[in-house]
Length: 297
Ligand code: UTP
Image (cartoon, rainbow, N blue to C red; front, side):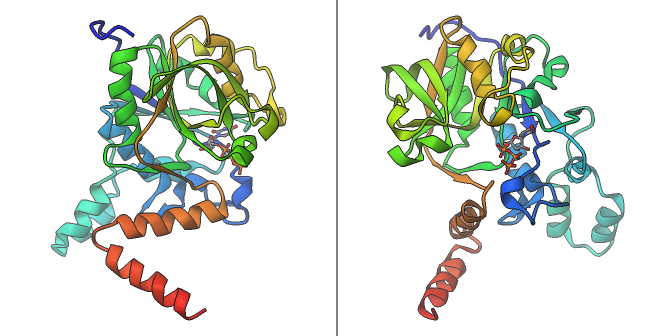
């Protein structure tokens, strides 16, 4: 690690949102998974706000069929804004405007078929060009003092290279995640010598699992361009990441905070309860509601 060196800044973030969300059917039959509301805003807005907090300037959505609502959410809704303005409803007007993306800062690219996360990222290659970038999976959300990506950008400014968010999971859960093979554990960061996609507990090289935040160097596109199919017959990002190991600096980053999985029914319920409890406006009432519900069972 070289603390003096200035690394190229992370200005762009990719939001892959072209997946089918099949684990959450029937809710996601028509509604994009990334539009499901967590507390008072859709998942994609949580992700976008996290990116902004981390200093990201350009936002790239990899969208697909039936996903138009995602980009519309970030448009100016003239009629609504005019109506709220004429009624003097300033607080609601502020909320409606809270996710209007500035002109020229939202880029859209399409993934015609959901061939896997790696393929989705590859679809953004021309917009990213030759600079490091962030990837945010909107169905992974974090409750943290400082946003997960902001913590990662801070760490990246010291390490450079590739950085992926990691956290400890139970032995049985290794089969649900990409798992890190640790070369050297430095505490907040670990240098990585390998990655395995969804290993059975007995084969897992550690219990350190990859969560949905990445800072990547543009060389990843060379490896994604091979379109190699991996676990589940999909073009996996993890498989392309493995090819960068040993050629570039590669770190896992242990973030501070709690990650919630909004891609499954149970994870989604848990995250709504957690965000409701953490919200200063609703926290006390949500707690009382939960206690009441538990008592009545
Ligand atoms: P998931 O692994 O959760 O896949 O994708 P999914 O297809 O959305 O959901 P399931 O497994 O069918 O329930 C993580 C993120 O990557 C995007 C998804 O939209 C989600 O935000 N993704 C996934 C794509 O953009 N394209 C793909 O081909 C796969």
